[in-house]
Each structure stands twice: as C-alpha cells, then as structure tokens.
Image 1 (cartoon, rainbow, N blue to C red):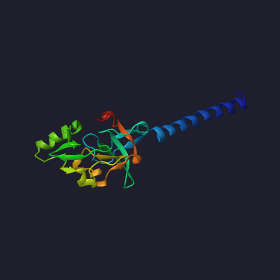
Image 2: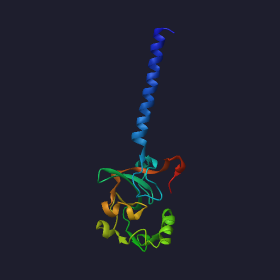
Image 3: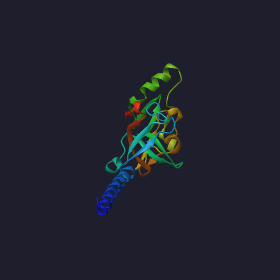
Image 4: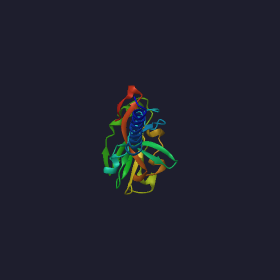
Length: 188
C-alpha cells in the first residue's frame, strides 16, 4: 500500500469516527439521555439504582399526560423523577387514600400492590389527606405547570413540598428501564 493510500484510509476512518461521535452526542443531548434513579421516592415502581432512558423530544410535540413518569430540574439544583398527577386547570385532592381530580375519583393501579401491603400491616394510608390549596395555596394547577408526586408517597419530596413544576423545567418522560437487566422493560 502506498503512503498516499494509507493517509487517505486514515482520513476516511477519522471522518467515520467523528461522524459517529457527533451523532452519539446529538442523540444523547437532544433526543434521549440515560438517568439513574436516586432514592426510594418512586418505589415500588422504580428502585434506587434503576437506570432508565429519558425521552427528551416527546414534550416538544405535546405536553405531559396524567400519570406520565417525568424527569425535571428541581429547585434544589437536582433532577427529580416523579409521576404527573395534576395538569393545568386541575383541582387535586386526596381523601381516604383516594385520588380525586376535579371532584372525580381516579384509580392509581401502579399503587395497588403497595397499598395492599400497607393495609395488611395496619400502617394507615399511603397518601395522607390533602387539597391543592393546602399545598400550593391555589385551587387549581396553574397554566404551564404540573403537579407531581412520587409513588412512595410517605417518603417523597414532590409538589406537596416543592410546589408545581413549570413545563420548561421538565427534561422529558421516561418509562424504559434498561438496567439492572432483570428489571428490563417498561415501568407502569
């Protein structure tokens, strides 16, 4: 092989690698990003240390939906992962461990197993009674915001403590657990 062919081949490989790294960076920073669940606020749905993929483009097309699991920038300069409970204009209330949105009861099937375990231990309700006014001093979730809660209601720092979350603080939604491999799949 001539010296010129060697340099040309090296340049071609360099271009391929640069394009590959560029595409990987674009995908990572603009479309999808990994996140590690830190803490127990989303148990039993998500475990501490679960690794997930965050879809960063989903909300550029449409807004969050009720019960989506979202990642957002919290006021403590940390990213939190919680479940969307209230959407703009919603009145959120809990009575007797039952979620009410705009006066209508809503099922939360992702909590059924956890509630059954607590009731078997006579531990009381998973979620204490509250109204939106108690927590954010407003009767409804403001426009452009969501009310979020962790699934482990007793041990979750969420909208009941930090207030409603503006849409522009939401990084994206997530449901795909990719590690540990035993938990691979979609979170409910």
